[in-house]
Image (cartoon, rainbow, N blue to C red; front, side):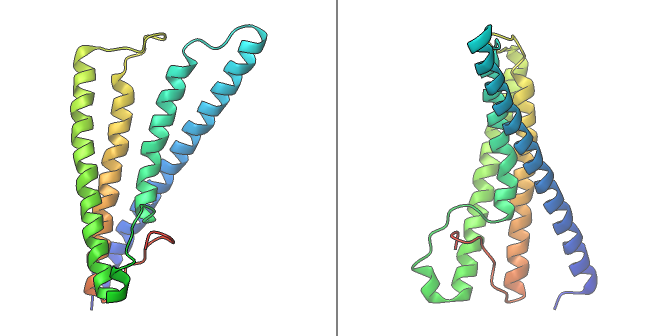
Length: 180
């Protein structure tokens, strides 16, 4: 049985991870609202005077950041796809082991994506590339996305810890509806 201190430490970590994911979902939602508002204003501008110059560049950035901002919450709620029709017949232990393996694979894949994105960020920072119309440096969008990807890897590692805790306590790993 886990000690009160270890349970309390895990609960505290779980609370912080959940807060991080919720803040990032809020950020992602704001990015989408801003992208929609900017698109709407540009359409109105095109119908009356002229569209907003560079609107497409900003909308692309906002939508990309929104995707990265939603990933940690999706992982925390285990919203990624999982297919286990065959495994379910083998019981809770098999389900837990396959869930743990899946979560390790997801963490590894996101770590790989984060590493490669970091290389892309460093490249954009060095070469000074800018957007075509607004001439904004591209590196800062890559930096924000990198921070969001790192947050996602942190959430993925927390999920693996939660899986190990549940397996150690002989509890079923709870997955999102449709994910398991």
